[in-house]
Length: 398
Ligand SMILES: Cc1cc2nc3c(=O)[nH]c(=O)nc-3n(C[C@H](O)[C@H](O)[C@H](O)COP(=O)(O)OP(=O)(O)OC[C@H]3O[C@@H](n4cnc5c(N)ncnc54)[C@H](O)[C@@H]3O)c2cc1C
Image (tube, rainbow, N blue to C red):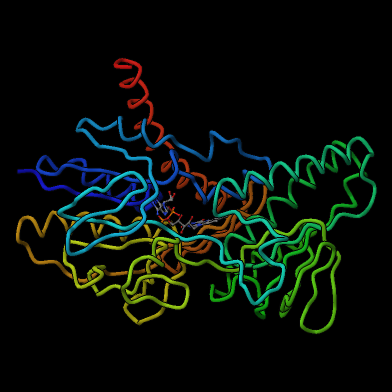
């Protein structure tokens, strides 16, 4: 009898795992997601700034599943909990049993509760609806500026200067630059601030990435505030620990993540941000048939350093988990997961990026942008080919 393999979460990790699993003739594969779409978070910076459209950042999961030769079942539902003993996943609508399970439910923005007013007064980019809400506000602002309906100085603040924060700040500053050349000086009064509590932007990244990004973001006119601890926000001001305050109109918070809500409902070892702590083979709950991958897990490299949550790690851990399921069924030995960062590319507004590959190749400017674009395009093209087949299959059998 075929093995039932269930994947929870159709993000970067979940989809990569299914690409492998769907090729196995002795497995019945099911994907569950609480959204009907896959959201390309790595492109969120371009979506909120109006550079990309909705169809550039989402893919319909049902059509994507229909695009496989073999049947891949898609269930659009919010997983409530997992019973490891009964090997069953509880949904809002019923339950589904499994022989092998991959949990790939990602993470959400961590609107720290110790910063008063943060959740109420800021937008996030990790979920499509929050990113979309901000995009609408930003577009309205540009429209009002064009109509001379909004004449005061507008401060847009990005809290958190990690990978996503710098990408968002740079793209928005670039859009403002573009508008200056078209709708003119009215837009000069839109100011962008990038704020971080650390000493530098991109804390933990290499000197090359920090310095090249800093220069680029500054050249785009972004005001960078480091060592800036946000204590509180009200309707009009951001208050810092050093008693200073900054008037703001929109705040996007990219300063931290927390594992998805499902982690809260699963009683296994977790870190401070609720990510699962797995064994060296990405298993949780001492169950060799349950894997947790991507942003919902704390991933450490061979030296014990915690790796930043990236699509790259999600995909590498997904490949490992999917191949491990194959090996377990075939009674083959499985080596521990070898976590490492192969490269980082940061989109920094317009046709400019900064990146590093294998820690030795360092590129910035247009060439880095082309490399970043090629990586993103390869990913997007893979999804599009699958979804085109799925779409054709669906209209053939309505
Ligand atoms: C602006 C921005 C820029 C970024 N840039 C880069 C970059 O350049 N390079 C890079 O490598 N990474 C980048 N990242 C990080 C990257 O997007 C994440 O690390 C990646 O999305 C993690 O993949 P994942 O599969 O673990 O989770 P996700 O992609 O978040 O997917 C999780 C899925 O699980 C589903 N889900 C959650 N809970 C449930 C539930 N209870 N039931 C059912 N379904 C559920 C969600 O709906 C979602 O579809 C960026 C992130 C942002 C926000």
